[in-house]
Length: 164
Image 1 (tube, rainbow, N blue to C red):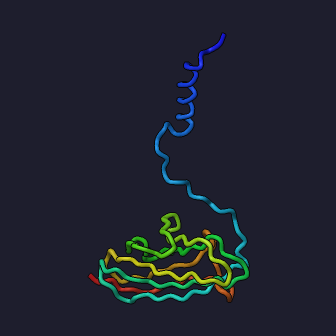
Image 2 (image 1 turned 180 degrees about the horizontal axis):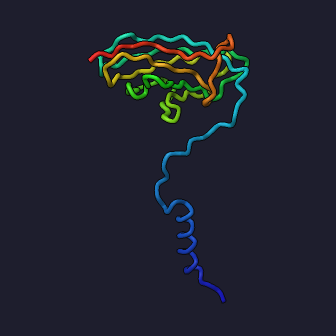
Image 3 (image 1 turned 90 degrees about the horizontal axis):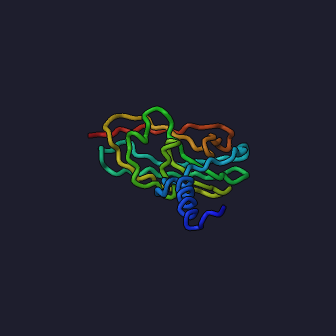
């Protein structure tokens, strides 16, 4: 017994649509989780400037210069805001140069930094809430903290007053 092709075609199309999500538009691409990386030879140096006082709603610049001073490239550099006054909750980030806001960190995903090179960028952001804050961050190779050249893991911080 043979089945006519005109009968099989709708069944095949239906099965393909079901297996591909029913013909719906795909959502955002899944987060790519890099393989574990040995960070022993990844070292950084940081220079930064922060403003001590700013009014709510006024755009503020935070300048950063992160250099790879290790002997290997840093494949997935990120800047992670630590617990404490939670910078990502108190500020709206308008622009972070070549880095992208990544709520899964919470912080900025900046990508590859090759040995000897600098990543210089400005975070342009507006404070949302008045208060006195101590903001903290550290630099990672995809969720693994990186050390400075002296083999010390630093948590960088700045104190800021946001006025109304």
